[in-house]
Amino acid sequence: MGQTQILLIVLSVIIVGVAVAVGIDQFQENALTSNRDAVAADCQRIISQSMQWFRKPLSLGGGGKDFTANGGLTFAKIGVDTINENGGFGLTVTDADHITIVGTGAETKQDGNAVQVTIVYEASTNSFTYSDNVN
Image 1 (tube, rainbow, N blue to C red):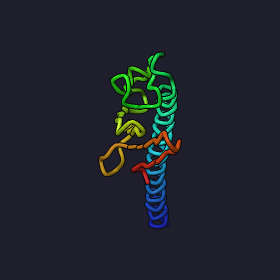
Image 2: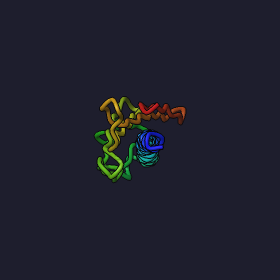
Image 3: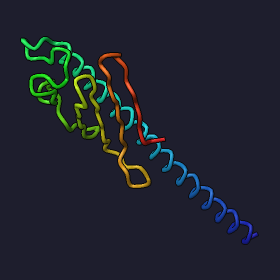
């Protein structure tokens, strides 16, 4: 009878250990997904404000339908911080018609790389290209 009880205790400890490991893994996956979604939402907000600046006439301090006008689009011109609780953001003006927003999240994947979201906006076609490194 004693060996049966010890066997049940060992089996219970193994099952609990596996359950805890799976729970930790699921929590990490959820954190990565949540951070990716938050960074993507921030990037979309930055794109939206960039579109407003792009369409604003030069005489009002906007781009006059040119991302390179008035010294080029910057975070300061659209009133956006480069860092928030979700991560940090970068803005690249490729040409008069294209910008790229890169958001680097606060969460780190198992390979040691941070969550990253990239959105490229093309004004002439009003189209977006989205990519991330989470999946």
